[in-house]
Length: 222
Image (cartoon, rainbow, N blue to C red; front, side, top):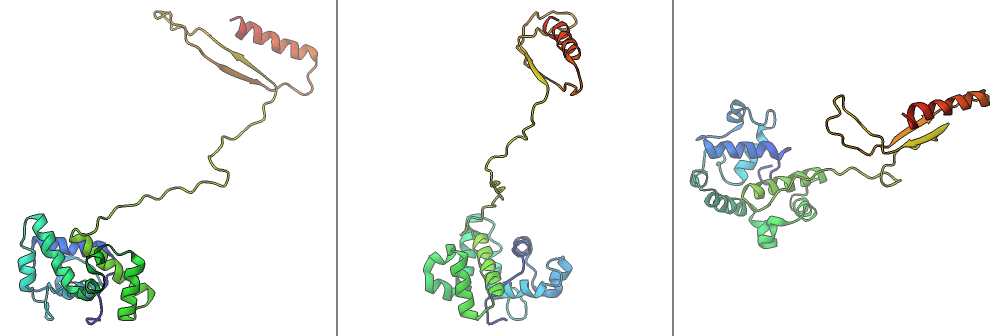
């Protein structure tokens, strides 16, 4: 695995480890140290392989001179420039093939490169590409933008309000005057009221007349 391009199952933990190394880079970094730090449980070897691949530690896990010089740079722009050289040197063949465009290659081209170079499976090639992009982003060469998942429109387009079939009689009452208990404002507010009445199917004419009479007396003439 050391002869092939490294990969990690999640870029998040790789970034966390690099952040820690910027704060405090131990003299030796191996799986045991990562376990003590609480990083990448049961996946420590993938992180160690990645850090070793970019020459921050040697074969025995000892911190390299390159790591010491790079990770003690406090200025952000100076660190980004130095770390870019670290990554570029480690992936020399990729940059020899694509030049500086390698920083922004799309996933399809990166996956093709890693699969062709290492004879990787589709899954491993994808993880190798993702790991490179994570390192490129940490070097300030790739701007990562979080994408929001958009809701898919329904086949009918915009959602429509559920229609209800009106039954009975509807009467609009407009320009009804609203008064407070003290009637201080004396302000007239336009108001629309929708009234739905379900008339009994077995009602006779007298029943309907009483209903409409009640509406006139209690609403229209109130």
